[in-house]
Image (cartoon, rainbow, N blue to C red):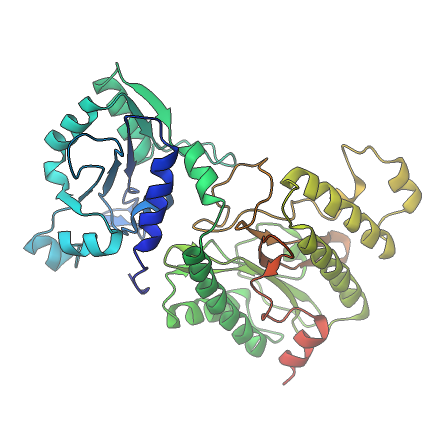
Amino acid sequence: MKYDQINPELFCLNRKNFAAQMKPNSIAVFNSNDLMPRNGDAYFPFRQNSDLFYLSGIDQEETILVLYPDCIKEGFQEVLFIKKTNAHIAIWEGHKYSQEEAQAASGIQKIYWLDDMSHIFNELILLADNIYVNLNENDRYVHEVATRDYRFAQTLKAKYPAHNFLRAQPIMKKLSMIKSAHEIDQLKVCMDITEKAFRRVLRFTKPGVHEYEVEAEITHEFLMNRATGHGYTPIIASGRNACVLHYIDNNMPCKDGDVMLMDFGAEYANYTADLSRSIPINGKYTARQKAVYNAVLTVMKEATNMLRPGTNIEAYHKEVGKVMESELIGLGLLNREAVARQNPDMPLYKKYFMHGTSHHLGLDVHDLAERYATFQPGMVFTCEPGIYILEENLGIRLENDILVTEGAPIDLMASIPIEADEIESLMNE
């Protein structure tokens, strides 16, 4: 790993919180991600299963975590099984965790090689009444590829059909939504690196550069600061491309007079930032571009202030929609009378602002969460309104990451330039 080792107190706390939500005499099992085949004999870069990492801090393939808080066998309340290394693996693949290193990273004392799991796990599971299995229950995702957790659950159900099987994800969602101080610290590192990359882009961008060159500048800054890379595929969209919400080709020249929309975030220690900015390629917004930009910024500021305890994502998005309607009327894009007559289930603002304003952020860019949960202190949301005017080849999106508190929300990206005048000033230094 490029990143500094995280304090294992984070993972000990996470396991303690998960165990507290389990039913009596239950066992829970979490698997690492697979090494994913790329082509031939090559693999995609390994990215750990976020749930396993959340509970163990172990960033390596072929890892299994077993939690059994009520285990009658002394010392087996939490057990970690890891890949056993050898001289061949060390030469061809590199360093793998020793048992002592896995203890230090996770705070788990019982570390066994995966080769030894079969008989140990069988004894433990026969003592338990319930088995928690961990399946991907992100409601944005309908899977076609069977994950390691899914395959393991199928094996368990076939081998132990008399046990009661339970879902780990409802507990994981409840816990993951509320970020501890340790997690906020990790997210701040991601955001600091992302800020450095953005400031680098402001110095670099000019008419004639290509979108992929801007992406390269961002990637360079990420790696120079020990980030793993991008937390998600970056969007570098100039001119008309900015009206494609998930444009990732990043292969077009940046033209004089256009605005470039960027959506990117550094991944550090498996946590990620999520930033959007829209900058004038020649360093100066036109009057129209600045008007649209400031409208988006107004919506963002008001939406940020709404990220407070007591509401939920559905009600919040409706309120943000009202602010956006007002701004679009001011820009001449919507008619006030037509808005008054609109179908509330199909608001007219959706023509120009068709996505949601916020989502949870953490180990994943669309982090594990209960969609309809009430906002609570400790939640971290993106705030990313946008206006996309295809007929003007103009797309503006602005996004910062916001921490919900007991009082006013905290903008964790407040130091990153966002005012139009400041953007212009920095680009023309």
